[in-house]
Image (cartoon, rainbow, N blue to C red):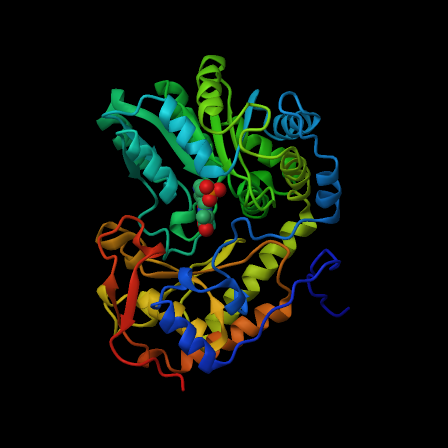
Length: 455
Ligand code: F0G
């Protein structure tokens, strides 16, 4: 029998046109945007792989659920559906909606005492780190030293030896531990349940709270099912539950694995902590039964949490990213593997050895993808983190959920092929404005030191 492709497990009911642009137009657009892709209008992008956050397509069931949104200020029916969905999935008793992931982080970080403390993690996402630091604590990443180059199934794991040493060294100064699954800062790689269990056991023994950053819990659960022998063939909801069972709290950006355009979740087991969080939530986000969201948002979120654990959806999702990774490798770009579901990360430093980190090779490659084919990606390297960041110069090709088809991915692969042909001629970029600004990648202005090799 002929091998059958893994297909998108959905049909398209609503479409959104893509405006085609010419190379000449894109040159003008990028120059006017000062070579910062965050300053390019979405309408000037052909394939937008900037982020998988909030960019997914909702299902017919999610849109139908939105019509059932109960917009009552207090005690809305939609809140109870949201609460049931989250409690049913995670077993966490105290559940709060927030307007997005970073709001959940901010509330947690303003309630848990942080001054003079440390937060240990397998990899803090930038907003989590910023919230931890705003509270006066230091965030310490203990990701595996060779996470980006070893090509092993669970590159997102915590380095347990480094973790043991840090637990010992900081002992009474640990505010909490964060496990980010999947681990966005090391190529979006998954965390094994074995590693999560080991971290959880150590935390419980030491009486330290373990917080799960659960943005992409479903994609992580699927990797566990595929690659961790003890959990093969186990149902995904069971694996997801095992992940949440190991944590004392979780924050989540629902813009990822709840497949909604806006929303977040904060949940904890401890009642006294929940009471304090509730007070902060009311002061900053909204009443606890809506927390910065509309009733209809809560409905779509509850439905999304159910849909995301569908095996054929996750199988297709990994097939799409794996396919993109293979196209990029064939084009000649080194890629972090196994590819995450939400994105493929290209090692621009290795692809463009004629450029040092200060020449912003990642941004040069990202600009080249835009100029050559209107593909928008995101630099994750020197521009984003400055000299304090991780040593690698990456470009993230993020895949919005249920938005692009295989022919779109083929198009990206073809553009990458064209860029690969001239990669030795891609120019360095210099920051002309906004160098020292915090989160400078959003606002910095840049210029190439010589023209890009596209006519
Ligand atoms: N944690 C992780 C691991 C994330 O990837 C993000 C967002 C957040 C927390 C914050 O959530 O955006 O809802 O406030 N990541 C996006 C990205 C922005 O492009 O990776 P948020």
